[in-house]
View: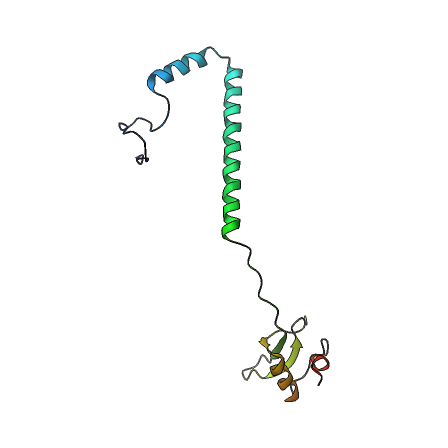
Length: 136
C-alpha cells in the first residue's frame, strides 16, 4: 500500500498518488489519439531522455557527496626501521632493515631500538645495510 507523502492530499485506495486528474487525462488521451504512432514514440523518447538526464545528474550528485564524506584513506607512514623475527615458536629477532627495504618485514622500531638490536648481535640486512646508516 502506498505511504502517505508529506504535503500530499488524501487519496482513495486504488487511485494513484500522483498524476493528472480525470478530466486532464481525458484531454491528454484525446490529444494523443490525434498523433501518429511515430510521433507518440518520439514524445516517449524525449521524455525518457529527459528522465535519463535527471537520473545521471542525481547519480553524479550522490557520487560527489560520497567522495566528500569519505575521503580516500591515506596509508600509514612507512616505518623508519623494522626488525624481522624468525618464524619459529621462539620468534627471535633475525634481521634489522631500513623501513624502505623491500626485503624487510616485521615490527616497526625506532632508530635507538635498531641500533641496540644491531649491537646485541641481530644481523643487518645485506641489501639495505642499516648498520652503515646507523654508524655501526
